[in-house]
Amino acid sequence: MYKNDVIGEIRFKKINNDLHEIGIVLKDDRYKNRGIGSIAIEKAIVYAKNVLKINRLEASILLNNKRSQHVFEKNGFECIKEDDTFTYFYKKLQ
Image (tube, rainbow, N blue to C red; front, side, top):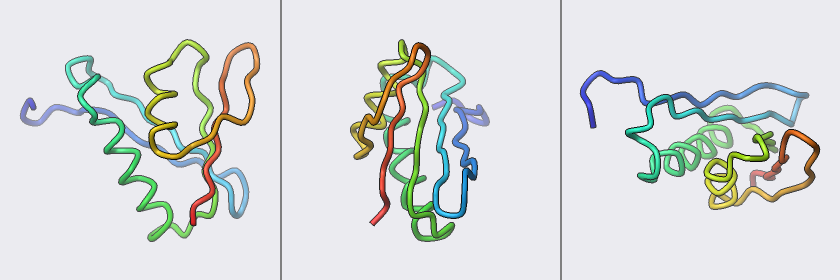
């Protein structure tokens, strides 16, 4: 890893009282395909459940972003629909 570099970001966006959207961006290609996104989403799910007390998460991912779709599927998100631009994923937090 490169010291003091910003790798990326994860965000939560409130949709309603028990449903939030999660998103991830890796800002530097040097960090892609190394499992960092999967680890980050895994830790964000734990944080959302235990600290933020979120019950459900959704993610909308560009159709052509297969890497990101794989990261969410790997972390237990299910594809719920697609439109012309996005694939939508959902996960209920137990």
